[in-house]
Image 1 (cartoon, one colour):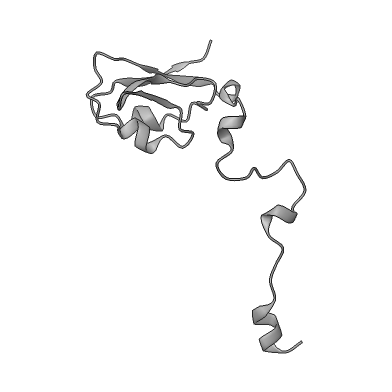
Image 2: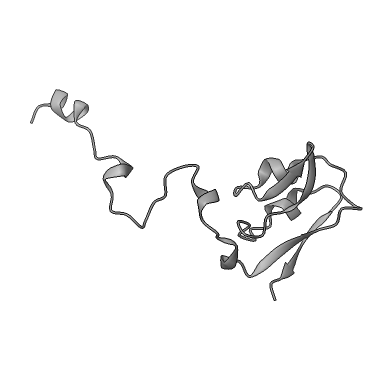
Amino acid sequence: MSKAEKVTETKPGWKSLPEGDILEAGTAAKFKTGSWRSEKPVWDEKRCIQCMFCWINCPDAAIILKDGKVAGIDYDHCKGCGICAKECPPKASALKMEK
């Protein structure tokens, strides 16, 4: 095999992999994954300054917005990673052990 052939050679993409290991991007909302967590964030509306850092940083899009403001947490999809609590300047979100 020449060097030119090696450069143009392509490897199989993710779609050719067997099912079960990788989900197509943007499909997390189709699956309830909240049961995976051991801790869950608890949001204190009174402490929230609506900076949206939790919403911006949530990898699961589990922060609920209503009329452009944080309105709660979608526990069906929240995995309890704690990024929202870590990024919240007034500490309006805190992790609590799941019951």
